[in-house]
Amino acid sequence: MASFRVKRVQEEVLGFVSSLLRRYNDPDFSLVTLSECQMSPDLKNAYLYYTYFTPAESDETKLGAKIAADLDNVRAEIRKEVGAGLRLKFTPQIHFRFDDAAVFGSKIDRILDQLK
Image 1 (cartoon, rainbow, N blue to C red):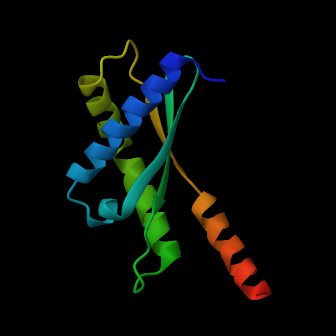
Image 2 (image 1 turned 45 degrees about the horizontal axis):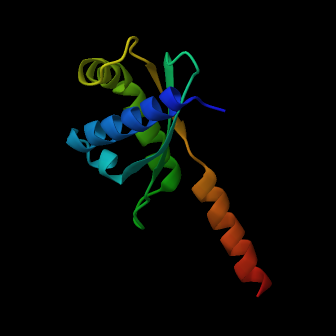
């Protein structure tokens, strides 16, 4: 179980990085939603889980790969901003991970609809 400090830092990092992503001019980042942040117990690693909205006219696989690559490209810049914007002893390494909970949820919904 995470300590109170870890939980508080998770919330701060999640909110700060979410606001940073909104400031980028990349239109794909407007489709991204950060759903969760998990910090390592020593607060040196931040694992940010994201989902994205897929417009009807786009290919979900290509869009997902592009968003993952774009997030990976801005990791160092985001880490720098987190270090400057949050008062932490150590600036955490930023790791983006796709949150597949929404995908599993939609699969379950489709299965339930087929059963009706």
